[in-house]
Length: 548
View 1 (spheres, rainbow, N blue to C red):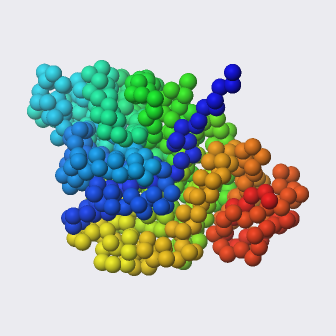
View 2 (view 1 turned 90 degrees about the horizontal axis):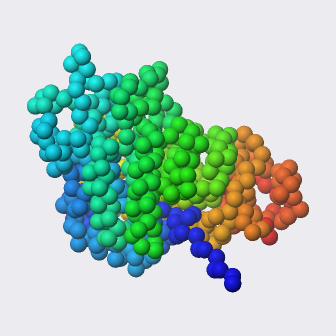
View 3 (view 1 turned 180 degrees about the horizontal axis):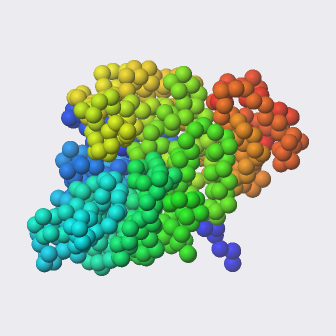
């Protein structure tokens, strides 16, 4: 008897789209994006070709950290709509074959969550040990030197005479995951939303659930650790606050708990910050029984448009992650947009297309940060009075916060870019008059239409979705690689310099004696075929070719 081949899960190689809900589409004129706004744009997302929608937090929250400080895990913040709106969103998304992934914060709550209000009521509170309370040091100061978003991760409670721990802001106290009651309560949150029809969870800071019980000081450093520079400003190695082994026990239990929900297992996407690519491997689990997709941020950590730097990251991916599903991330709500990091205003469109070529042809599930498909650029705040992001307020002017990467989606050249009829919560980038969805839909050579072409290619060619990746050569300017599955080779050439470059295919045995046909190009090409694979690449040109 021949058993049928097991179908790969829907998410393996799928294209995801991140919606920062405050900035995507406002439906009621209050200047803040909402659930009904997302519903109104589902046709656009379906036409774009994405398969999964990751939505940033929409729960009731004081909005100290814009939704990552949750005070009720079982409802919708009124500024984003009602539960009926969310239920409609799920139904309408399903009609368009779009899967909803929601952001879930398990590491901490708001200080206005009923759990913490009860915990803070006194040392004898029945929920006191639901959070991490400790006695002051001998000098009356914090118990140790731990730091996170603030200079000290400890806040003193005058009523009880103890400190509570918070890796993030003081309004975001960390839950005590050593308490089984916490685990039980938080697992119920996932059950609730799974029953609402979501297909997975993006687990915020999931590798921060545990801290050292002995409260040992973190080693002090001269600089912020490289892997944390995008998100933190602490000058210490957080070896006692991040990536403790106990995290894996909870993640494994969580995965096992969710696997009982039915035939279709929920997808877990994990936000994990680790020092090296190799350190991602444990988060898949010994039996691949933890997180299906730990976020791989190492491409987004590359600080300049450099074929050499990107190649080094991809070589490490190939060494450690070749047998695991992975992700491709260039931008998100915590990072400056990739177009801002790697391009000037003058070359921004060319670089946006080049980056898109890489995003959709690498191994792993690509994540589009809203607006990337039209090449949106950061628009940083100019004065501290404009700053909304609390990190910007804390660290101004050395760090201006994340507002610049969170500006409203640019839908049209109408007032407020078609985002809202009211006053937008953040200033729009003035370039929306030229850079917007409406204009780019009408232009066949736009970034948006190039995105649509690449996504369609990825869905058509199994080599791009699931094929192995082979890096070619060590050119200083051109990043080149093969994607291949079942004798279906696809070649990708990316000129990451402002100069012309010649790619010589005869230097690579797998490419010799073959004619290659152009599938996609960032620029207009003079020929559809390259018999000798001597390709003159224009500045910032990307090419996708298949064996003819």
